[in-house]
Length: 509
Image (cartoon, rainbow, N blue to C red; front, side, top):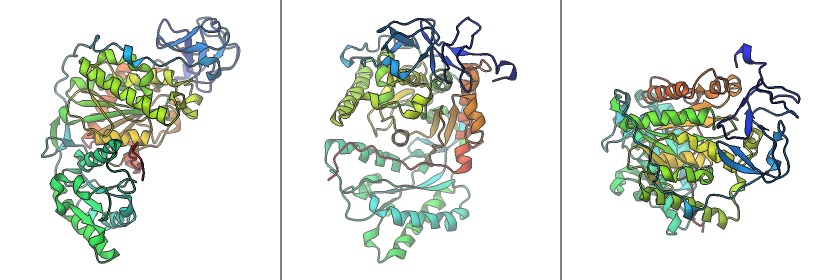
């Protein structure tokens, strides 16, 4: 916040119909604070938390984003802190009553003249990195592969300077699982699509054991045995390592011949996600990312948004935007599948948000959802993907995933994501090895605290120092620069990445 404004008490009211506002000032505001509009705080309220803008009786709706986020459990005076404890969670929208494709947004004017420097693949996809990817067919081989990758990076990679990295996709699937259970299709197709990720340049390589249920042949095109190392066929540990290194060097030599070249934005698949969200997510970072998402769609790119439990309570705002009723029914199908999945586990949507989300001012999953879907911008939704499926259309797509950062990121990569934009209010060092991750902060205070981890400060929107449009364009241009290799994100600079995490709702045996 500029020095001249640091002592000015500020709150954000998103819509004229809202009866709560969010405290903007870092550190919160004390009891007795008087706002320029005449509102006086009747108790201290932390940054990001809600203040009542009117007197509320028991049972009155609490409105934010012009939507009901709950009902008052007891009377709340104007100027009081609207805490989680005084908000009754409303019911979710009924899936059988949702409008479908009745307010489809008109296509925005095409945005022409933009390209990025990417790596073209024979299948028509485009890489934003040039990586040797090695997939495992079963968890049993992970220790051996990790040993081999360490040697590959030390001994081979320096000989091939045009290759960015060597990445092992390790996971805990492959054996001891109900491989033919109906829901086993989710982890299996996820691994298959990850093995063929655009950033791997078509040079598939799989390390298997030899007796696993998930046959390595299922993970490479046409089951090509030349792309598989089976450890049980090797006469000892060092021959295992040498076999992996020999196959890796063959592929490194091919990948090293690849060069970046101008590519249309139709080659970009940008995944959007939020983690460590707070009450500013829906008013600063996510709207700015949503504006950038619309720019990307106008320029011909594909944009993925996800996280079913952070969409479910706002799905009534999305089904009208589906391009047709078939896509609308697919969106409802994914919501219902997840409702049933949670019910089988004897949990409900109140398990979200996290303690950190609540500390940042998010009272319940309804408020969180309304802020989360803003990342999707205003484009029509053209496709809905079940977990592990790959995008086949261009435009705005809902890729159904759990809200877990690591599971969501894994499934978005399987959908073809080659660029990731991640918004955060509480802060997280989350990163991916397979694709660049741009971090967008919801608060200036977080950007100042984590100056060497945050790439874009959307907190300037809250204090009026930047507009949603200005930050949206900043994110758009940064996406193109990072995708082209002209700039590195902070997590790329530090080499930070999280392990990928499969979503496996099928039984273990």
